Amino acid sequence: MPKSKANHRYLLIVNPEAGSRTTMKALPEIERLMRARKAEYAFHFTKERDHATELVREVGKEFDVIVSVGGDGTINEIVNGMPDLNKPLGILPIGTGNDFARSCSMKIGDLENAVDVLLAHDVKKLDVGEVNGRRFINVMGLGFEGRANDIGKMLPFLHGAPKYLIAIGGTYLTYKRMPLKVKFNDVVIDERVFLMSIGNGWNVGGGLQLTPKARLDDGLFDICYVQNISRLRILQVFAKLYDGTINEVPEMEMHQTKELTIESELPIPAHIDGESFNPVQKEFKVRIIPGAQEIIGNWSADERFDV
Image (tube, rainbow, N blue to C red; front, side, top):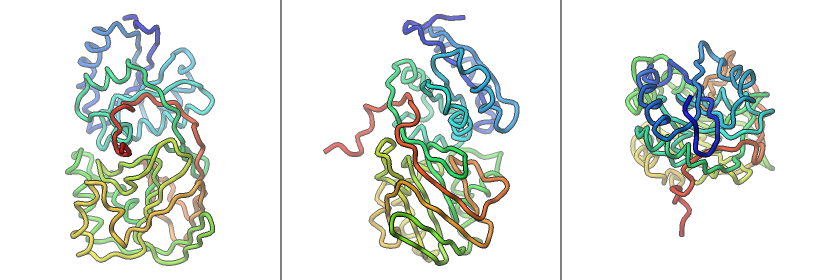
């Protein structure tokens, strides 16, 4: 097994299904890059949903760094196996959306750069969200966003931006607002709601920015809340979801909080880090856990708040 100059041992957890099964095609290149840099590593492969969580708990203590080789769902499973393991998480993003990797300022589609970022070992302690006992690292989405995520899961033959655009388009044509009762800070909202996005990170849906000002280490969620918006208005402002200016749209209310509760008499379409709740829930209790997870990222490249 190749040796690492930094004497770190890397557990590479590979999701063979991620990125429409492109991870397995990337393994020879990952091996070449890791060997060329004399890194010590071992691959472990997931076989079913939540297997990554089990792998972290079973063998994670034998390694210095846990690495996700897959997409946002793989990262989410690994994060849920890490609470009792004081080790950093690295990312080789080969998934469909790779939204958390974007929030970590990593280049998508550049595997060599991802390996270099991993081995540079720039670690930052990030906040982690928790909802109904399950952790998430990037985002929780409800309503329109939750339904679009469900539709995207029905399109396994697509990946990247086309998958999300088709899922959003299908939701756009069929989705109706749903009743939610939301409580956070001193705010109580009890009305029909179009969309609610709870961001620890700032990317969702393959590069959309519903919470463009979110910081991963400020101890707060950024919330994008939309009570009502017309279909025509969605088309008019859609480009702002990509350039980070959606917070300028009056229909998009922005809030910050450490915790919140969400209830409905109807099942709420929702996801965390792109993973749908199954079974569907009618109530969520959400809180942030400050500085709960060390993450290796390309932190020097995050220039969003530079003056």
